[in-house]
Length: 242
Image 1 (cartoon, one colour):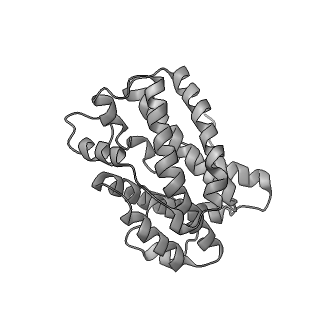
Image 2 (cartoon, one colour):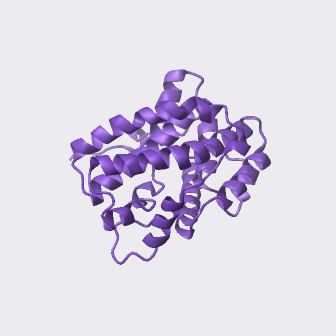
Image 3 (tube, rainbow, N blue to C red):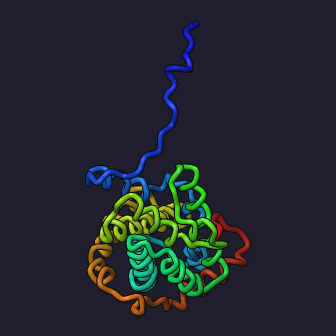
């Protein structure tokens, strides 16, 4: 029987991003991938409860719900924090990035939404350590870090532009929401792809406003979304954690 010598086994290597834009594009795909092991697939952000209530029953109703959350919560709030955290990392101002992070954490409406972003932020930070990526001591020592904060640091480390980071982050969120709808409405895979095709255009529509917004412009005011998350906490049976 043939054996593999230890000399032929290549040890894993983890390298920083080169300035080449093709490499940056690959890193963007990696950050935006559902294969990123941070647990995003386990959250529906209240969508499951809306299905349980008979509000989300088809492509049209899911499109309205996800489109509204994308506009009023993600584009007008979370993505703006992401951009300003990214710029703070780029300026080598970790304390400023973490200050933005504290405010973002306080903006989470429910216990589930807060626990979600902190769990994913913790997992993201652990992933960076496992990938042997050097992170600032302030980020390493922080007791709690949200997902956009940790994600924005890796986006900075890999040399992504503001535009690339926003597109990747929102696409990742959108894909997760659509896949949650495919599972629990349920919708067919083809209908899910139609939704992604339609709703992804919204990302481009909001991109310019996100990139030119001050941190004071960030708002998060979706009472129905918050209520859906609250009721999901006590839903009798559920597939998702929030």
